[in-house]
Length: 468
Image 1 (cartoon, rainbow, N blue to C red):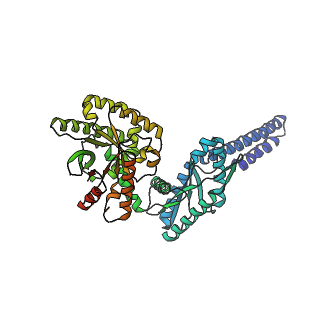
Image 2 (cartoon, one colour):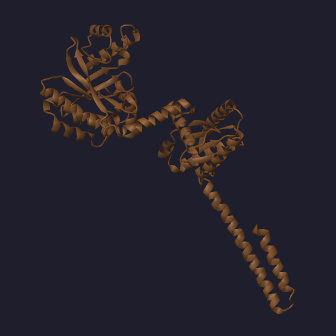
């Protein structure tokens, strides 16, 4: 606006002063011309500064793509348009697989250059009617075009996602490094029925993590079933925070018997009964507790209660050979775990009762930090605590580490025990585990015994301990 207005106004003044015909008129004309130049320069500079500031506010400095702020506004406007047209569109949330490894091994400069190349490939591959933005880190997001039908929108979204996966997997050359990297893409369809843009991005993110969980380098479409599962997950997570405070956790004790069906031990099992959710399976809430870190406090409560029970039973004359408690990955790796166990044994148990404690660990515990796990187990073993390998045979690392680990017992997973009298594959697996245990001089417990036929079959194979 000022570019044409300022010269026109100053020109009128210059002509007016010049028309006076006196010396001061000429001076005023000169000053008016100079003032016009200054004003024009100031207006032009302000305009360029405004453009630069706006670009900085709406663009990512590294990749020169639109940023999260621009994307949020663009998505809001798109949702308004959809309400008038009743059309459908989609979001593609793209996350690079193992990008952190590139940064850690080759440096952040190489990582930044890689992100620039990724952004360039995405720009070149995307149709003109799609909007691309970088949300931050190695996450990019695409807003698709509008389509009349949901079926057409779904087809176009998945087709575009597969094209992007293919182009992103091609080799990158950065500072003489040849880098191969894949991506995981979450797809979220939306229409005039959707109102919350934040929820759309979150659900696209959920779909993307489903793609990662399925093995990465894939596309996952967000569905209503997934939405229900996520809502349930969030509800369990929220209510689990108050489970200890409200005393909703119960401990059950499953007996361990010998070949004559005499009770020789017990395993402590946790159950959660909530007023809103009812009975919640450990398979549901234990993984959530591990993800959120609640398992540390939860595990400590279970361990304390179990030790009190063991002492109480002993005082009542109930004598057991062993008393098993499950220990999770996060709980075992906690910095104060060993110290807490030592204090617990010292304050609540006699040395004889400590010798009856068996900590059950799964193969996932040892899969990452073997040296640290062995160190923790050996330190606890000095107190008299024994260790059992739970769900043996379902993981992938047990055979390679079994010789190193100070375990005294293997527990055959219930999936192998079930119908062992009818399935030859299960029978072969159980025999193999029994042979391994015999060779390594380890005791064996068969879990999940539910039928008399299963018990008798395992008896014939010289399995001496049973649980179920």
